[in-house]
Length: 232
Image 1 (cartoon, rainbow, N blue to C red):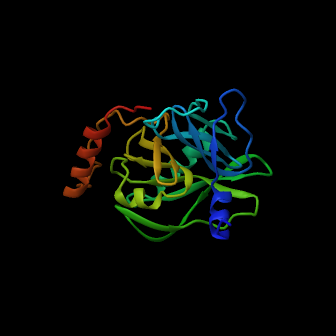
Image 2 (cartoon, rainbow, N blue to C red):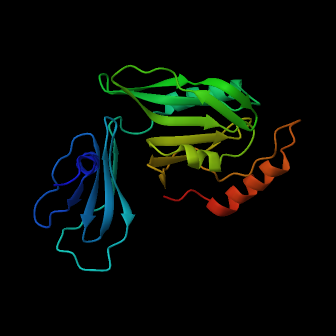
């Protein structure tokens, strides 16, 4: 008899062989591993998200299963530009410090709302914050923060914090008419870049009267060389 702890773990994240001839069975909210002829995938379904992401290429043995393709769909459609512009405005009001916020999805209304997070400790280079309380039908869908005058990049702290399932966004160069940003889908520590209107493709001067630290300059140069133009 299988250990009840193993039964619980497999119920929480089952492994499904992708059908070769029929459709993939529907799933309730949760996540499952899909074993396909063309690779291993994870499927995640939440109130606001339905996605299939590849974890690895095809295994080095032939499998009698069907193939499947990656997909990504948000219940709310595309990211709501007006709400994000409201967050940008809040980030500018908070200069030179960083600012954090979130887009909260309501299962009842099927809409997003913007909340600004309470700062516990904040500076121009870091913010520790507390997410406001949510109603029972609400879920954090988009996690946002700013880098003030600096360029947007993903820090090691961001990578360590982004272990759940959400969209993450970071804005920088808020002293310029058009800020820059990075967005990514986060699925349990795996990241997929997402397209958006605030591409990192412009080199800006430092803000007046604000000299970036040596570390910030190094990080900005690393970001520019590593990622360059947006690529999905």
